[in-house]
Amino acid sequence: MDIPSLAIIFFVSIIASAFGALIGGASIVTIPALILLGLPPHTAIGTDRFGIIGIGLAGWYKFHKKGLIKYRIGFTIAIPILLGTILGSNLVLQISEGALKNVIVILNILILIFILLNPGIGVKKQTAPLGNHKIAIGALLSFFVGVYGGFYGALAGTFILYILILWFRLTFIEGAATLKIASLFLSVTAASVFSINNAVDYAFGLAMLAGCLIGSYLGSHYADRIGDVWVKRMFTVFIIIAVIKLILSD
Image (cartoon, rainbow, N blue to C red; front, side, top):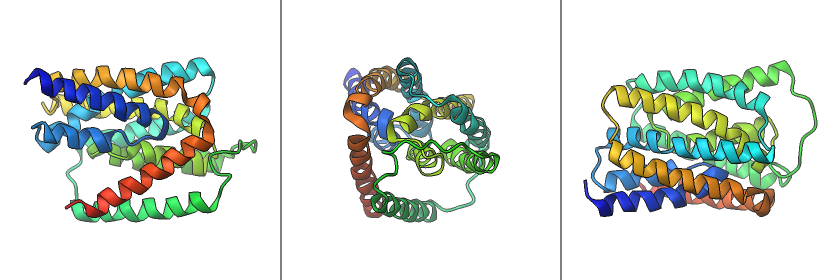
């Protein structure tokens, strides 16, 4: 383990988590970075799960101070995500990596089209009360995201944000804030399972954790100054880039 490698992942984590605190998707940058720095794929995923705990911690603290977290919705999705993460982290995958990638690409394209065709999504506040059926379905969707987040994680935060914006009708900033409860549950649970199985590199993990704390704090601090419209624009651009990257990757 050399100092330059730790410095690289530290600074990469600051940048990835500053955007990840608002729009999710930090792991789509940090996992490949860890692999390029020499970690085996499973260890890279486990180390990433440990490091991005910092996004949940700093983001939760800062968004709570701003009063932007919807706690009822946050815990409604966090509990099933925790259960799904436990299952996903221990799951021997029954689906090929290629098939999983295709599903993710198609899903992101369809949701991106829906967002682009509905300008008010994620920008206009919704005042309609949540019915029990809506909460139950949202919890079920969150469980499946937790399963996915447990065994891989890249874009898991983005999928949770989809649920918060498209299903629970939160604005982008409210969604980013409320997401921190679920993302912390997911990260801590997955990191614990990977740690038990000796699949966490703690030197890289601690460097990542420090970077994610700083980046997430900065991202959440400036969230309300950026505003929902610009967060939505950044989110849209990010998803387009992520889809292209997934299509072009081997």
